[in-house]
Amino acid sequence: MTVPAVSPIPRTRPGLGVGAIAGALVEPGHRHHALRENTDGNKEGGESGRFAGSHARGRPSSPLPSIDDLLDLAASDDFHRWEAQLAATGHCAHPIRLEGRIDAIDKGTGQSAVMYDTATEPGSILRIACGNRREDVCPACSEVYKNDARQIIRSGLTGGKGMPDTVATHPAVFATLTAPGFGPVHTTRMSRARQQLPCRPRRDAHERRCPHGRDISCPRTHQPEDPRLGRPMCPDCYDYTGHVLFNALAPELWRRFTIYLPRQLARLAGITQKQFRAEARVRFVKVAEYQARGVIHYHAIIRLDGTTGDCQPPPARYTAAMLSDAIRQAAAVIRYDTAAITAADPDLGRILRFGTQIDTRVIYSGGALSAQAVANYIAKYATKTTGASGLPHRPVNGPAVIAGLHCAAHHKRLISTCWELGKHPAATALGLNRWTHMLGYRGHFLTKSRRYSVTFTALRKARTAHRRQQRHPDGEKDPWGRDLDEHTVLLMTTWRYAGTGHATTAERQLALAAAARAREHDQIAREETWLN
Image (cartoon, rainbow, N blue to C red; front, top):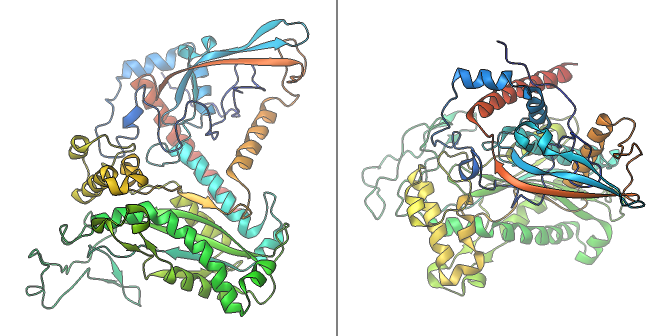
């Protein structure tokens, strides 16, 4: 028999409060609800839980279902309703399963009626999107997050989503702030003619060795997929403690950068800081990316506005070239002494700073570096992790768990160093035991200044309202046929967490196939839009 395709029905929230109707479906991009601990992990339960995304990370995947199991699922009476739920989650790879109901109570008469009950759903379960931003955990939810990030970035450069079109004329720079070196690692190098060069060639390679007797040269030309990229030449020489501390305190370095940048702009303009604050404001959006060696660096769009609240351009003397100079100078001068947080412990003493490879590129409307290209580039990294296989998605619980990880020795040692620093009396304020899976990084992956552009919350609310309007063009009704009004009807919701992931391997296999078809359809639609 032929397995039916996923129905392309409109997606909307079930309304875990006001606005729910019988048989309502969940909005896939909505990330905030009482069951979620954070936006980067899943609660344990069901098929996935702590091993969500295990196949992408190199761990064993779930066994494939039999043909009979697939056919039984496709032939079931409620298969089309299951398809509808799946489509409503955006084809989420690890949906959260809920049990419960929504009751409506007429405030005037006290009469109650059931508006929605999961008993009418397949398996008596409602499935909602996990909302995980990580592409290797849930491609569907990460795509929603990526598209929202793209809108946030682009609207701050070209206007739209509540931003005026004149923002496109403001000085704007795409900046990259890298991490310093913690020891020689395998890397890729390019000549000025854009030809790839050997990693670390040395004519006297046999004579030049590290204090531990290891050869620190490499005559090979590494390809982008080479697993040796980012690995230390000598693990014993590599400063793992400094590496983890930089990841942990990178958000503080960025905070200091945002303080120093207006000072440098005022100095270059030949005015006081008070005068600068009266004339211009610095707006930014940034995303954190892991380099191959497992250390954080930042990509940022930095824009200058006037001091009025309606995003007017700054005075003409503030140019993009001046902004580029100020960014390089501010990034070069900031420092952070770890003694401020590690109680002056000599083993943890480091002076942290950004690396010397500071890149700034002016964003031109319609130029080689356009707003669209920058938005796509930064949004891509908003859903990425380290890219290394075998790394955990959740904090580890001790040395025994670390020893059992199926990841490279370099990353395993970073996780181990992070765990040890979390137990170190002088570094307890950093709480690094909770960030072992992030290699010590404690910040958000995408942040922005308040007035750069629209917010994630505004985009999600707009998407929810749009899908609700699609599903109920005449407005939502209460059980008595009246327009749903929270002033006359009280909604009582009862939900119970029933697990994470698909209930059976057959459901999971069909869901993955449907998700692949949906992504292919979306890609074709985007390409047709670009061509037209």
